[in-house]
Length: 124
Image (cartoon, rainbow, N blue to C red):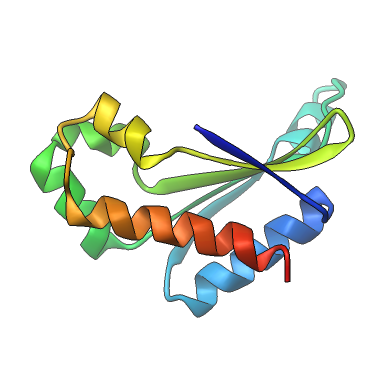
């Protein structure tokens, strides 16, 4: 798992990631606001958003190699407040290879590049 500190709020980071994903042609399946969900049951939680997104062409290729990867697809990226810092959290290619039979799969390199670009764009 990778955690990268960014200098934006959770809300602004999540919105920028959503916009970037849309511009890149990805489908956003869900935007989960964990803080709002906690508040709805009278519990407190720092700001935390989980975005679930994907591209069926890429995801299908991974699942054709190891159908168990369906557990972690579509892709997920979280933006969380932790101790006053905003962190972007996502799985690494090493995580996918450790959990599934995907070693050397060309889609993993593209996923790594995508996550790196999304994080980098938050610095601009």
